[in-house]
Picture 1 (spheres, rainbow, N blue to C red):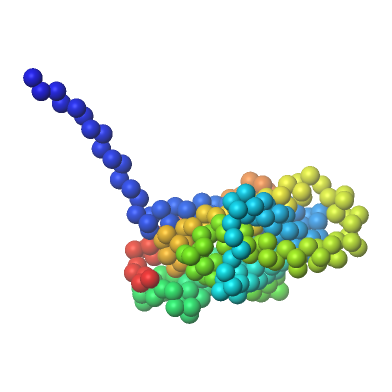
Picture 2 (cartoon, one colour):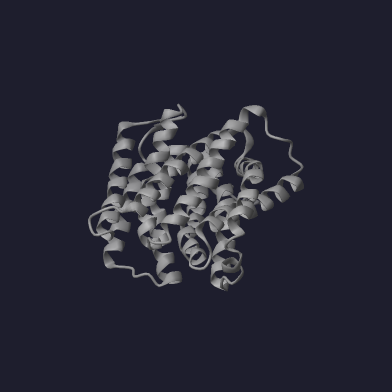
Length: 305
């Protein structure tokens, strides 16, 4: 008499592209709360303190992680890319957005970030990492046009100085994302963001002390909500989110995973409504559906790596 033994079927493994998209989506969800948290922080704290302080705190976390892992110093060839990551993601984007969000609602500023995937894909193509197909570019431009139209709709048909600061921040972030993703293929995303933070700390820490001294009383009397917002942007937006974001770009490709960020403005819109009480108009949902549809189409377009 033969006994039949049931062998459990192995679970199908996710493809590199799919796992990259999922990692990128987790990173986008973390980044999506950045603007509401920044708005909470700059309500009581000086924007420059928020921008530099979040980087210094994140650098302390990064230093502790590097010591725990006992990792060697980065090679000399990595120093320039790390400097560009610092310029774009650690200094430029946080500083410019902190200033802009003193006057812009988080919901308005968030939609302007919708063009970041296109900017990231453009810089990636210029650096020779990937070659998106014409169809990909068409979809990326369509998605960016949707979010720009949304920004104009929210802003009464025109851009303001704060809008220009946001666009400059987007360009700097695109450079940092591209260089960080390229370097992550060799070093890993955790090392890239950690070393970028640690190597920039000797410049940022003295600058933080210098700008904080005149505003010491203001900083000392900031409310709990402001400090909670500051803690979030320091630990999650500036550090932990990049573990997922760079990891996703390495696995799924810079241009393709970058398109997931088109969903970020609408994560921010929901968070701004829940956390800050900013109104969520029905038109926001229509734009959200349009952008998500563009992301779904863009995922099917060819990108040569």
